[in-house]
Length: 376
Ligand code: BGC
Image 1 (cartoon, rainbow, N blue to C red):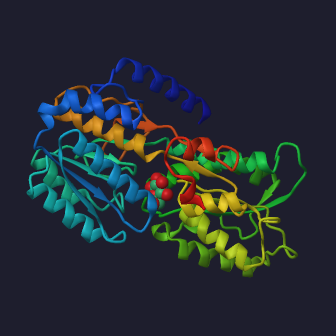
Image 2: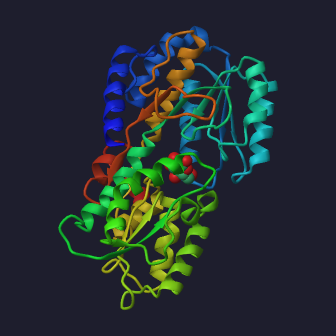
Image 3: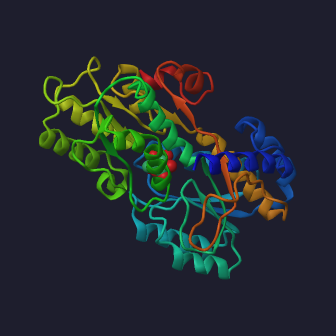
């Protein structure tokens, strides 16, 4: 796996160099990127409508993704039809996509709720020659998908697994350490990479007995959280606490792998309810740097999160839209990893970064992602 990964990273680096981006640089900052995108794409973009379909407004990140996309597309001269599919409601997302297709959108940018449920509606897009960009989550089983833009999801999982490995010093301590595992929505293809990436790090320690999963729940299906729901992950953690007798002065629990912040929040709530405090909290991982989780990190009740700068992803996707509409080469840096069942989808993977108490200021405040007051 590692060798494959290194190879694909090398290839990725080469491709980034060879495919000079049509809009003026793949890694440009959001502020800088809107200028070249607007100037190079102004003619192609004027009055052209782009459909942006987001899964839900109930999680902070999708609101940011939606508004970043809308702002950047508008700044580049496009008209934007931005829709949120209720609270992860699949029929609503399908309806909204139908309306975008009949409503004259020239490109669709879609963050799917269920990666496998858009096959039919996207046939219509393909018939109408409307290119589809899969946003953050890969749309499965559809040959209508032209490109995929996301963060390196496997790396996210590896970061989480390695964080636990290092924090427990698994290579030097005798253990055994107790851990429970929580991942996200089983119909989100990203889960395979988050959970898979983390388990590639942790499984050898589970196999050797240094890490023990007392519940015995180690499969993706057993660890899944429908809709990435905080309430669901809290319920599951409460059940795990009861059935395994975890507590600050009972059976020790050393770590909980959580694939993202919304599930981490549920887990943290359950642990606080069982009497844990910042002083004796198990290691809890996360992803997204949602405000509640950053506050928990600062309070010592979540150990880490992963910063995925949604501004970077939005810029990248706007550049993809621009290149597609101008008939130029679309910048991608991965043509191996993401097969959606109809073949590999050319992808651009942005870089995730580990965030902890130690670097949150630099990552989140200095970069203008949040103001200090947001985290008070
Ligand atoms: C995204 C994560 C997010 C999760 C829940 C995943 O597909 O990559 O950033 O936390 O969905 O919305």
